[in-house]
Length: 280
Image (tube, rainbow, N blue to C red; front, side, top):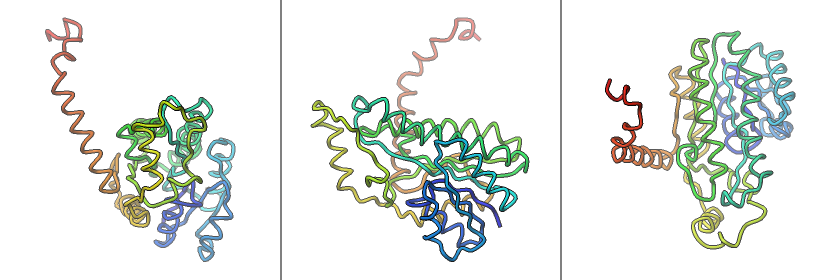
């Protein structure tokens, strides 16, 4: 039996994951801005479920939530940084306040929870951190530039944490979710830029707005939750875990593009070293 600490557990992928972990007999610390929603969703979880109020942008709350988890269960084995928010609009349309909100939740909030949990995992010399990323953390997509940039940040942080925490027996994984049928593209999760510009009333960004409004996500979040728990329970979770055919296809295309750029510009790039390095 493991203890899972899941942020953003009241809806979407977080709720599916909470249910899957509980169904396997694990203990869950389910955090949300409105924890009573989680309690109502899992009325028969009993002592295996602890619901805690947590706005990830409040570092004090993160510390208190971790303290409550350890007081109740004695340890935290798996942290899932799932809480997040989206923004749809051109990069130019995105106000400083809108960009800051995205980073406050998706990046700085994740960091606040990591800072609160990692000391416990180091003390235990065991644990696993799962950072919920996106295929948009690998590919940049018009209309989602700001949101995607926060997930690029999550990818970089995951790489660093993986190296930093390995000596303490702590693993780290970024999960690149494709488009799963949650409420992510609904108003409860996805914000639209407040001041759209006429310049973007036609073209790729407007096409993305229209596509998003009519889009039916192909991924099944219940299957994704089950797959993620399988991977963590296997004890050999990778640094990156893409989930969904769309994620795999887009990541493969990005890898092919990077390889082509390297091939096309390798000779020029290598000439930028100092002459003594080139000669060696």
